[in-house]
Length: 290
Image (tube, rainbow, N blue to C red):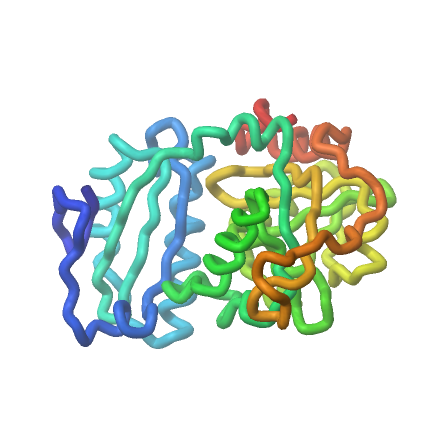
């Protein structure tokens, strides 16, 4: 079941033209939101923020705006069955909305943290990184590769080896008594949860450093997490780095562990995560974050 071009479709298949640029080139922009309290108007859902992000990308590309009332109608229809909605808009203004459930292990991820893999190869770098376009191939490839090593997330790097973001969210690191996150100028997505966290922390007089994540900076982090609008904030308790991945000159089947860029254990229950909770307790239900 999904919503497409003004209609609710009771099917798992979609019909598009063979010359559709969305099919041929991934020409679409999208946003993924979590519906809180079964309401698009809940402040936690941030419906306006998600629509504004789509508007900005459409305007930047010179694409047609959708019928926003129809987009709202589709989201209202699907939210009764799905707590997570992915809203995509094509260049001619057509809307396509699909729903899904929250990850079954979300509470465990929030409490215990996850393992992340460093995706260093150039093929994992996103194009038009400041926009959420339908061409998410590089991030998808990185996540699939990470899963082969037992990791739940992939961390994307730039050509200089600086850490940028994960395949699905923004990065957060704790050191020197404050939070650090890569700057937008580094070529990352301006995540809506990232913006909410920064605003919430600063309202509590917490310092947030938006600086490039060099190897030296990363080596000093006591705790690391990633954020997005669906999972909220998830700690990363272990970073793995593999040498010899296919596509980088290594022989498949002969992968070896490389030295971890962080020479000490990361905590998934550090007091810094409490600071995140306290910074926006009036905005998001962070009671489950460990």
